[in-house]
Image (tube, rainbow, N blue to C red):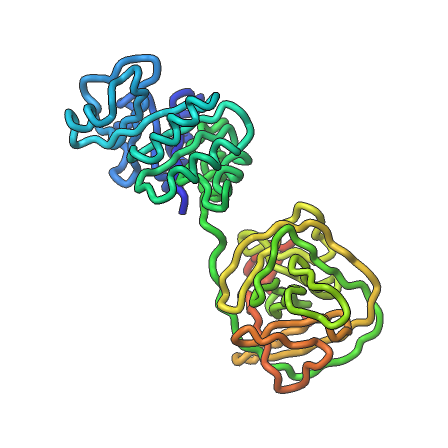
Length: 366
């Protein structure tokens, strides 16, 4: 989990934002007044950042003090005078000189609070690279949650944390969600194929993503919300066409697939910019972005399978040898060669769905 700091210095609804921040367990509250730390629990880091003024004589309950060395003094001297406090440096990056200063801070200081004046993320990439191997933490200021999401992903590593001054209640919750490292793992099950049937023509969807899939990775697809089969990407070689490791020939357009926060979407709903959940044979997941969805009329094949607990699963795929699903240990199975007794990997969500959201209600799918 990445670090989340909430800046309450200029917050118009400070009490409400603080209540939200404590409820969702942000990592730090930043203020220019030690009075804002009164009553905060010890589980949240209290960061003092006095701007435009000298350091106070008493740091109160502050755990971390962010300073500008030219205004407040050098960090090593401050740390020696106040061993009970952790000190960090604030750097506003506007040119090559301040970028160099940010890199030095990232390499030597326990905390670096960075503000990049320009919207480009290239300077942040440089600082992250410079900080490789350092034990210090980089916290980057974001103007909104959308920018925070970008900052968390820069150079794949991302900033160690993001600080946001919430404009309204709800922004802090969104920031915390953006900070989550990936999506939770799923408990996949082994399903036994019970029947296959050629069911005629229909529309199927190829989901082309902005990501290279691994060879043991695909997306979960099923005719019913409570049972899905792991469809592999076109990562594995084919005799008559090049590999397309960004693509999953996923199934008929009515089928469900998983996206963020356990929500389902019909394949027909996906479009450029949508998110889908990539899943590997160990159940590890990550969210990937859809580049496009190709829907075309093709002959279809229906695959029925059953879980050890008796739960039945159905998947309708394009009726073609190069459309594949995954079995245990990453075995690649051609859909047209599946037969009763074969084992495929799947997932059994426990809740029914209403407009894609999980809900506990009676729902019969068949």
